[in-house]
Image (cartoon, rainbow, N blue to C red; front, top):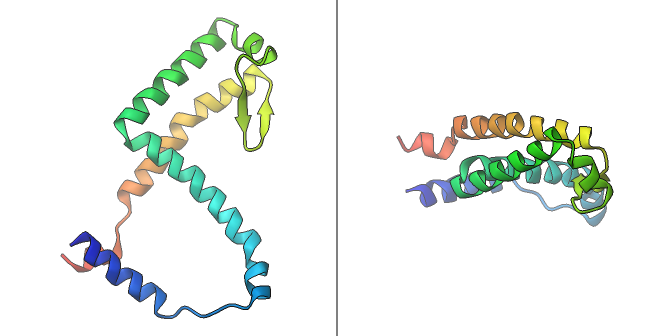
Amino acid sequence: PIFAAYAEEHGERWAGAKALSMDEAMAQMPEIERKYAIECEEYNNVLYGVNDELAASAKLEQEQLAKLADVGELQGKLDSSELVAIDSSSAVMKAEAVGKALEEMDSVRDKAVDVVMATKLPALEKKK
């Protein structure tokens, strides 16, 4: 039933599709790439928020990093490159920035999971 609903919704969405020229497609690429990056980030938030195994592992690693920050060892590990923190495409070298990111991670992940879990799929709603 879920696949059939998905297939029906897929058909409806693609019914009005139009072909693009290469120039039109290339003009749309920056916006598509921007949206793709956002989607990947949100996917990771949901993945680590819904999958119990991954969530437990991520939580443990977060706690270990928070403990290092609390006892003042995180900055030394960043300075020596024993630990490397990455934000987008650049290294984060300040323990304060890593600590702040750790604090924000839980709330962002929980919010993303709540949004996804509250989403109603139109194709599934029609079948009820």
